[in-house]
Amino acid sequence: MATGQQDSSYIEKLKYLGLNTCPFDIPASEWIENVSLWPPVTYPDIYNYLIVNSGQYTPDALKAYKSLDAYNFVVSGWVKPLYILKADSRYNILISYSITK
Image: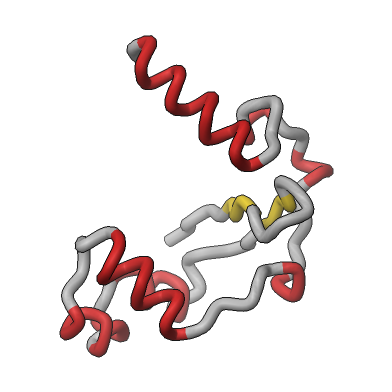
């Protein structure tokens, strides 16, 4: 069960994205399967997100990205389809996917 603080944090994140509702409540017809709508992402963006900001991965792990489960799931065709929802006019997007084995 969510606490009031968790609810407040979630609502703030939705507001930041320009959403008035939970993404799980947005109809499937509003999600688009089009990778060309994704914002530009460069290697430094990925490095900063995974290494500098989150601290979940090491620089060596990023160099060995082919050994990571997520990479193998995508290459194996288990992650599909990828849908995008443009949350606002900026680069705030949500990506939805499913994993099938």
